Image 1 (spheres, rainbow, N blue to C red):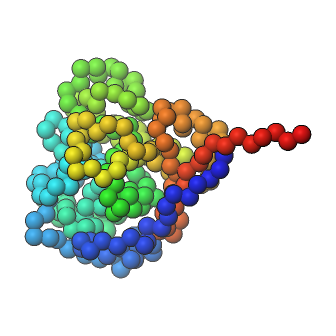
Image 2: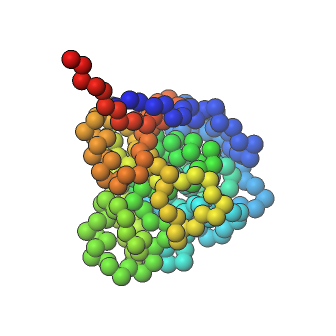
Image 3: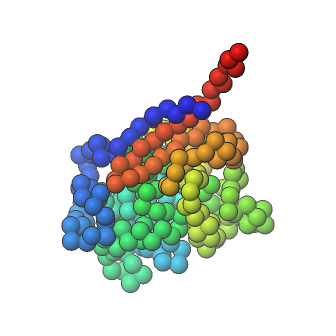
Length: 261
């Protein structure tokens, strides 16, 4: 297999709309003294963090980002922790706790650092970089739209690794179980990535442009790549590695070498 460099370095991307600068993020977010304060826009969305679910329920929606952000369940929109932090850093989301008190940015960083709900700091950096480039990014195996389940038993059986379902589950607590079962290990799919699309619909997103896998401790082996390719049913794979705030993306091409006499 031949490695093909796809993109690298989240540090080089700038966005004039970003309200909270991220220059200090490569120092760790938990070095609290240098964490910037939240800076809000005039019209921002409001969400309430649910510790039990490990997600944020959106209470007030402002702006068009909700077309490609969050999952819809029982006519409500829920944000994963990486979506919550990304919007909070940009000043587009005001997060509240269960007592309607504002949640500080450093506290959202801490939620990511805990590695719960299928998200770690490295996966957040990858998510942030892709979103900053304009891609549509969703959790791998998590349907964009979830309604009342017609086939609950089938959903529960495939909850740990959903490949392609009708996108229906019954209640928000099942969403919690689904996200909680997504533990980031060595190499596994983390995000479904779609190209920018103003006509994107959560009810019919289609196949992603590629599936992003996170390689944390070591490059993927040939056996791991082949196993992931089987899991992803022919959808292209890309791999990312995050080190000291730098996000690198690679892909692999299969190549047959001639047998020499």
